[in-house]
Image (cartoon, rainbow, N blue to C red; front, side, top):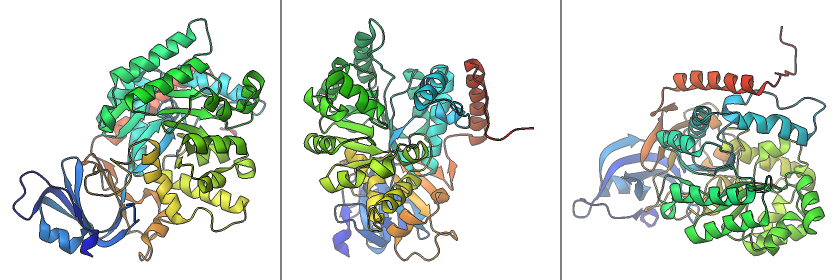
Length: 471
């Protein structure tokens, strides 16, 4: 199978041989390349931050000079997963705290509980939360994320994330509709963050994008400013939209159009825009998504735990059929993207009584290459190919949940344990080894984060309402 071997040159290689820092030899490789090739007894060569060769083990062992070789025979190798929507601050250090009481509606829970918890965080709180979120993502194979636009202390958060080694795009909290100077301040924030943390054509490990809260929180001028920044800098806009009927109702009352149709009408949509949730959308809005090339981000845990009604009214199967790029997000509710894929597939298969919906291959595509496409990074990440960034995950099959490996993509998508991630590389740097972080004292980080979370809740003054009595 020499036709599966692809190489890119590395400086200093001996004539006829490729020089590499690391050779992962013997793994089953799910390339996610255009042909979706699975390479049994395969190998990957890494030099610096790039994959320089992918192919059969025997062939790479003949053609690659590696400074180090890793025995990959017990592993399935995949591209790093992409989390298209996650709140990296707030939730990670207060996740177990109930938001609201039985008499609070969704809006009350949001305004009286969720937002105060977010807003009470100090820069140190957000830094710890971001590191916890990054560590959790890495432990489950996520190497790249798109933050949800609810970071208040951007500088502290970016500094903390830089220590983790993860790849990500983050946006500072902007709501341009509330207050006399809110619109101008929101636009100024968008401009400032993009200038302070440039994307560098996708090469930056961390960068700031105009990631807005969304819903009805920003004026048309803020949306258009965000879109203009994205156009000028070659980056993306991302925002929440239509998890429930509230967003369509507001837009219909104030603009005469549903949200996606209104945003299309003012010129705020395009292939560099990502919208999260989209649970309550019409067929007309689906057509607008298709026309404009907007990417849809589905957060299964948030949708189905939050009772969005998506299994009843959601149009995600139709979006995929229409060619809309669908990527996955955890929303911070769950740590692992594989569980999100499984939940999404299971719910829609049941709702439509169609066992062929969301086959295993599509589930893995949504977690990898679709996410890379949505973030405009598919030339760099999302598949294991020579020339791409060395964002690689090794899944340990030496676990009872795997058993014999008959169909690696299907087993990984449907039944492999999410905790079976053994090793993770981002930009060619190993961040996880044997399931443990190479960057952090995990116990200390957890202890610090717990104390910070207790402090956040204490400062809000909100009561701790548990479902069962604690005695």
